[in-house]
Image (cartoon, rainbow, N blue to C red; front, side, top):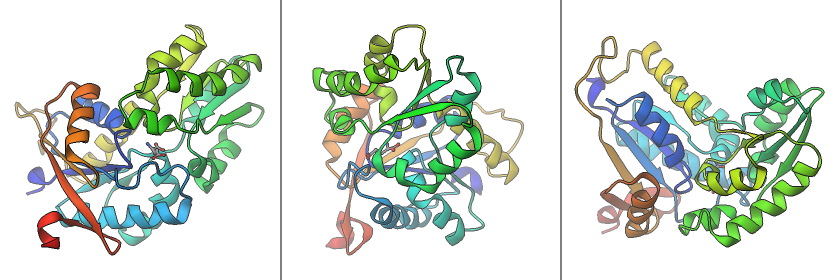
Length: 282
Ligand code: DGL
């Protein structure tokens, strides 16, 4: 039965946990299999082709582990692989992300919006197309925040180096009159306090995580794949299984810090372009 199949989710590392949080709030009964590709983090500077290769292999792994739907809580992997994955698996519901330029452009009063995302996200067609479709007449400023993902992966999301990177990105945007910041990388909501502190209370911060969780919910319903099977009534809570291609102890520590949860984390390895378990390598 579909109820025992998990939602598969993947990111380069801990960024997707900001979406996992929203998924669990929205869909408490669902089991989730969360894959962190920490052997390859950060994805941001790698370019579309390389990230697409990783994403396709991770999708094969998630499907082999029984995923009934795949969500990509990573703007960079979505930029690189959302379209190819939908072509490869036309029957599988797949939810991707793009920087939330649309709601930002709708709500800005100053007409100046700042987008924080990775270089590969800015390079992708998905980003160019949202800016073209939804940001006509709005000034869109961009910054790739070099080094910020690494700081967040190291557990220093609100440390002095993260602050330096964010000040360098945001202060020029503020000088242009920006009133809305799009968090276009799923790692960045973990630096929320520092971002808020730099931009002050009047600037709006847009995190698309809740919208992604609602999209997952509606696709599950559309495909009759929801864990409860009926009217959203359940007394059961779903479980989360964490897998990393990096150091399981490090991910366990980050999950403790970022989600206040004691997670059991499994390790997997990359072997000739495929994800395998350490046992399979023998
Ligand atoms: N969290 C990712 C994103 O949303 C990727 C960050 C990275 O690995 O560079 O873009």
